[in-house]
Image 1 (cartoon, rainbow, N blue to C red):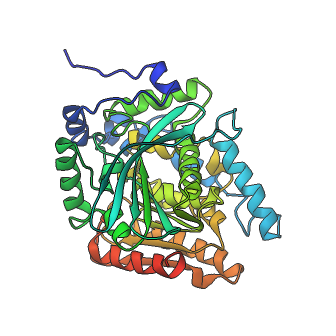
Image 2 (image 1 turned 60 degrees about the vertical axis):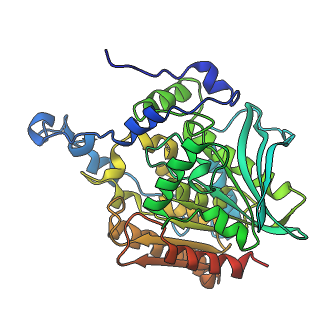
Length: 405
């Protein structure tokens, strides 16, 4: 009998205690796949069936109905600040954010601490929301602060035994270290992005998203059940993720060692989505770097696109949002703050037409606010879905310009 892992309602309603990682489950999840539905089996010739990657056969009609009436330039609101507030309110409504949103004290605690040549490493716990606490890895440079800071947002990758450890080298856990080093070698040229930034003088924080590392692990198949149970409870997995990212940014900005006016977000893949989303929603983020997650919706929603496989999409799925705003329209809520977007021309997740269209759409918004120099978009011709050392070096130099010392 196939073993199933169940996510209980108690785990949904509380972020603690922390769950122990199951490396075997994470390994199995990383190899999971979804088969395409053949035209014959799906009844693609009729209007009632399915098409490849389980799109409805009438998906084109649904796409044609999306006109994004609240986008800047489409909206009847001509004052940019008024538009931004109205559009942000619509995004927040679509997030199905927690009903109880009063300020909750962070009450931070240090779990352990280690000193290296260039920075201090801490495992910290703090109240992430009124549902409970979470654990993060915090790197603090030596010397007198306050320091510029970067909130690191980890990717998905169907690898759940590590989350925050994908971007900050873990300590005290050999199994996680081995997983993290393998991940770093695959996507980050063997570097740990957080450690690189800390050595450059940045305070750095990374926190697990629900389902990863200390807050998991999920299996690939469990994502649908987790997301469905959130919807049954009148909430949203993707909305909770967005809300928690806003809280993590506020926590980082509140630290006495951090200059709250110089806090950036940086993420790769799903972390990139979270980075530009966070910049759109949080006033604590002054700049953001998003690597390998940006497209227009229409170009993404095509048969066979790997991003349509379901499961992982639930962490980035806000019901009804795209009736109002396209993906780059949401990112444009961050304007005119500095933003850096990197994409790989060989990235099979995002069609080149979608990347180019999104970049053009965002550039029009920044230029409308006479802030074109604050938006950098770059497609790396020989790169795929990676954040390699050369991409990192450009991103770090860009951060030095906008939020560094």
